[in-house]
Length: 169
Length: 437
Image (tube, rainbow over all chains, first blue to last red; front, side, top):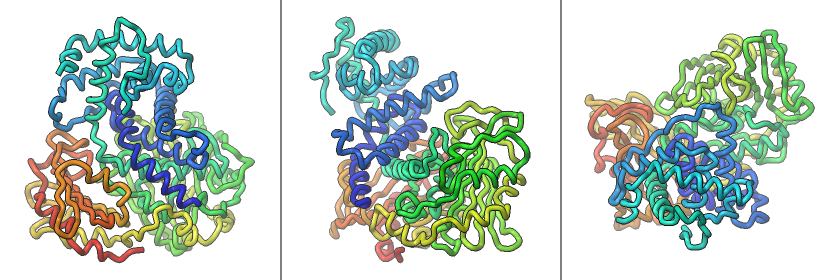
């Protein structure tokens, strides 16, 4: 029994880890070390509750929720000083990618409060609805709306026109 | 990924911007390389197992420093951070397959027999063998094989943990990795020393960091004793009241290396060690979630060495099980060369070989070559990978970079081995004939 449970978990983890890691990279505004840590922590938590997964229904979505909560509790626990922008991915950009815009986006994300960043990542990277986002964060829909509007305004002011230029390509 | 249509994004003033933001977020997110995925999965698995162990030990608390649950594995995971920090450090970094090793470990949670040592007895030995100070121990009423406490000598609270384990195999050999200093290729630390004590026990003392990249300043000091009759006594201390997530409370952990040594070498542990459940061998079998035969011992490492081109000096080497690495120098600068030999990877073959520069050989083996700027290390570090897999899912992947380690700067423009040489190593048929466990 255990073995098949572990196999199932490995299959799930192999399929989802890449996406989890990328989500974590956005949540941490580019701190890939922390993102690795959060991803592993999330997988560890998923493993520990894997036996009960049948009742949870959608493990992929649940893992994203676990990731966001892990991220937020990490933020709460860490000392008051927010670490500045973490290590940037230093690979060569691929076609159509604008490294400057990547940096600007990660920088702008870093300027958001962690919870606002989580809202942005859930809504615009995960494409979750306001209600789903509220569920994941354990807050009300109204709170998500408020955070969303505030975060978008901030991102817009920091990213300015170059984001539209990118999107138009 | 689902698209935006379904989500009722409100906030009309941002409508157009929302779409643009979504596009940029996706492009940026997808720009993060997920090459280290397998290592992340393994790190996650290791943490998950520890989590299960913790739950069964009924020891709670976010900062539990249950060191070395996966005894018998390579060092890394339990070394600098009892919850797998080294895995993290090495993760996308070192393709260091610890799960397999830890799989074969004495993982009490994955078998029935759980150590039933009263935590208060462990706490009493800790207290009796350390300098005077105030102690608060977690879960003193519980039973298990590890104790976690907070010690305060007046200079700041510090988390301290001690775990008692049986080394794998019962002959002490499987635990030997626990008392060897790790290679600095993978883990950075301030000091590490090992030695054999009069009487034959082996001791390792290491002073490092919870996060080997030192992104937080919490220090992790640890002493591990491997007794000649096959027990491991593993003590860790921190300069913070918790391993992670707590601000540091003092410059250094409270006990000196000598004091930590005195703690792990105390005879007071003997009666408690006798209570550890026996038969780790069957545990290893039962606990193994990945059945395929893993290459035995240092076969991977030695074969890697034997397949290296002529004219290279090996300046460092290591690895265990399916993983091996060497640091080579051809006189023009160091290069790290790593290999994973993984017998049953068919379940992820699609992920690994689904994209990129993949060729198929006449015998059906797939070969994928990746040359990229390294994700870690100083500027100018490049990373080359030759990944191969047989139709049966037997994978051999060789990595190299133009630096001597993950946190080191480039020593040369390109790695010492060419892609052709890497291919030659990865495609050697000797990998499929390695002795297995």
